[in-house]
Image (cartoon, rainbow, N blue to C red):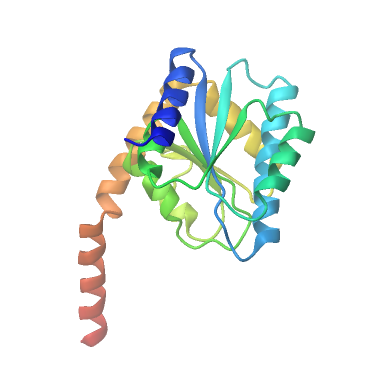
Length: 206
């Protein structure tokens, strides 16, 4: 195990021991940097709304997974919003699935330019509840109030409310995570995809 991964695992363990909720957000390098920046800014603003308007009594930290050219600007935005102490930019990771498994839930606040995010399937595969935007193929992955919570794209208050709701209920997080894992196994494994594509090719050739 390399030193960076060990330090990050210790970071997660510290927050678990201190009863602090940990949830992961995604920040990946993309060509559409203006879209990406806006998406994560909405995420940061939702955290600020949650933190400074006392919508939850839960202690929490946010782990931003990924890297890109807007990272410095987003870190500065976190500082301006006074959330830099609860938002941790983890940078590029090769052990994303393991790190998600150590979090309480996962957030993907997309506003557009989505298709069928693998990141959501990663979260579902390790029994994590998901908060995501109602855009593109995401509603096919996340069943609202069954495997997670869906919010409208760009709705900062809606996102903040969804985060507050999951922060406030361990039972909800565990139920959504369990349901998500079952949905993943039923529809989204590699084996299921092979069967589905094979059936589609056979139908199209008839």
